Image (cartoon, rainbow, N blue to C red; front, side, top):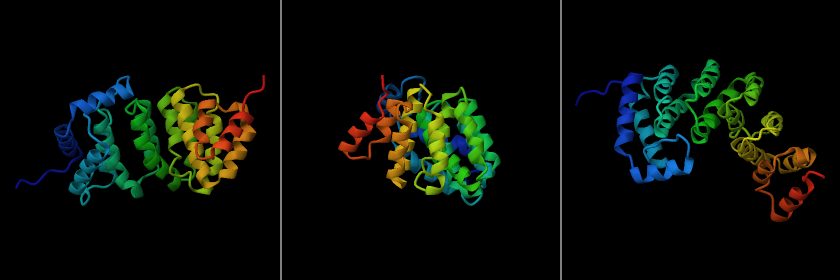
Length: 249
């Protein structure tokens, strides 16, 4: 059997071929209606996508380092199909122990170029990859604050969802609450939902702190953000928080 070559370009071509083989036009049509906009996909399920990524990783794990994985992403992220982008990201995250600090700025470039131009792609990349960088290089906690001021909605969403995996660690709660507050004036629905999601995750580490934060910030918090943030409270407390944080006329 001919040995499969393993350059990033060759593996990107192979990965695309295998993804297309598993395409499901009916599922793809439904997903594209759900995501709307310019979202394109081949209709793979999440388990199929992860299985495909595992197959590719098995072929390259003995030969590649993080440099090849980044190049693999450079080739796949510009592809308009969601599964191609996700394939690149799922391979990259396998090398997170090797992540160099410079990858943080590389990811920002990908975002600025709109290679990740929907919430699904951003949410695949950021929790594991950017989150790993924030944990490994503590000075990047200051750098990511500027992402919240970007005119690009995907950069702003990235600044939030990058903290999701870190939210269960008390050491990151100060940075998380500061990030959440910095987005309260953002009118973008996708930002407000992500912000509420992050606050809900932070509450898992300290529910009392989340409750106090919500009561302190009160009417400054968009109602969409608030509703997501309080989902883990019991019904009675949710009602009390919704009432207590209403803007006073």
